[in-house]
View (cartoon, rainbow, N blue to C red):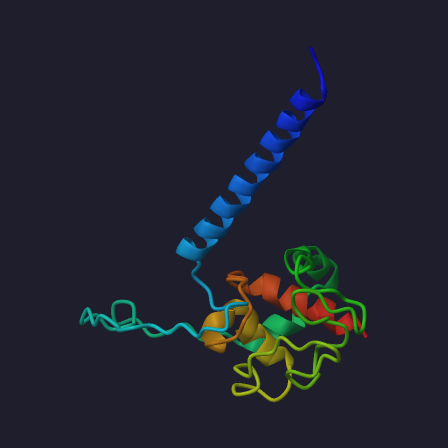
Length: 174
């Protein structure tokens, strides 16, 4: 009823099934891969379609924000909660790099100098020399728009208060 041949067939079926799943996963990743990370290729936009619309949003002037006042109103306690969005990729301990560089002492630290982190693209140092609160504020709003070509995949913090709170919290981590 349950002999060695049956056991061998069951083990073979399981191994064969796993092999088929691994090959299907590899094939799907190859077909549907979008980024250049880990594949040694650089992808660039092929062309831009000009729709004739200007970027001024109906002729209204862009709203100016008093960054100094916004940053002064930052609450480190609330910023600690906002940091939970960052903690998936960043650590607060000095030298503890993860997907992104550690953020210990990041406020007023030179850009691209987290020791032991080798994932910098160079796009950030082309835009800023130091992570001043103003530079952090602009970067956290839209990382890809602030420094095109950087490797941070996070879309940014849309609320001005969240950015100010996060910068206030990061300023206390020294």
